[in-house]
Length: 195
Length: 254
Image (tube, rainbow over all chains, first blue to last red; front, side, top):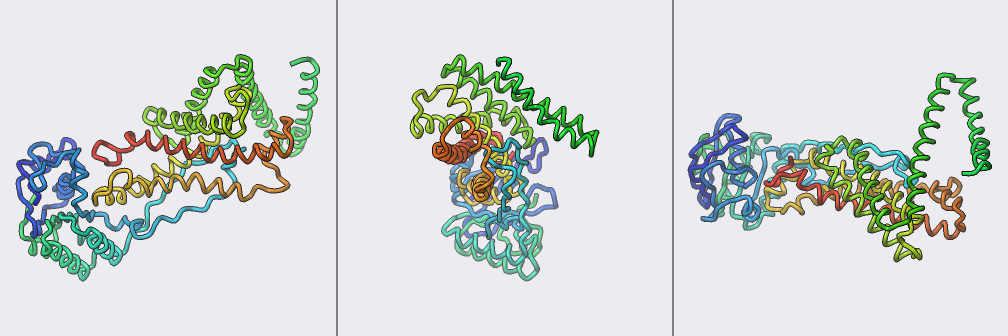
């Protein structure tokens, strides 16, 4: 069970939510919704301890979430971020460029150029779904599932499968928190929090 | 420097007449560039040699260590400029890495491997650590920039790992791997092309110093291996000390 009590969520000086209170219960799917830029992702990141709560508190099973305890809480969480398409290296390790033997000799006084890593190629919708499925199946008995816009980059068919995947996690007794504006996700949720 | 040596230096510099003559015939404007380049190189060499001369003359361990600190800081400045990273944030970690790596490997080579009678003798300590710092600097440019740019390009992967309960050290391991490979790969590439007929400059230098070919072979081998070890130690120290500059207290990439 994850509880948010009188929390103020902010990014810098900009306050996104004030006096926010809700309880995400075990075995339920809680959907955080709101317009673009309303703070859905920021709220999820705050619940994971990546950002501080300005006022109020966040607790997991009655234990207060702080900077120091955040990592311990995250070991109980499964996280599917919004930018899942950028996680190609979770499926395949990056290929490193082959070096030419010219600039970097021991006896050479020339300084090499700084290395510029390239962003990975975006994953296809099928690969995104596969990664989500793999992450959830590898999570074992982690009690909290957090998914940020889980259907944002999926086809309608895969969105439906993703929804069923998340519902099945809730059915298994887990606390499932998602951020989404998709009507089908909102309809299936046991609780909807609007920002 | 006696009169005879000055005369010989002038005679040696007469060899410049060959490239200068070629440029005079084919590309006159480049003559000036050649003159400036040779002049600058001569001044730089002279300054370095005067410093080494002073170190050899006084020959104290503390002065040698102070010189190594100075060399590490100057190399750190050059490396950071090359990587376009802020000096205020990264000079301490980079300089510390470039000091610790070469010092540890240098002392190991001097006191344990070779071993030299007076390990801290400036005649041995100065050129050996200079070589190690120089190599570590070039490799750390590749290592740190590979690490930092991979973290930026692949920030989502780091956050994904952290969000799924991986601790900070394990979440940066894929990026450390890329940094280490960025150092090791060029070394492998260079070692693979060491030719039989084009001798490495390092080997030539050792031979010119009067060392026998077999000893020069051993020394070159030890120095190449030492350079690789030193650059890896330096990289680990740099990455460890840079962590606070790269991540905030929530573990987010700055």
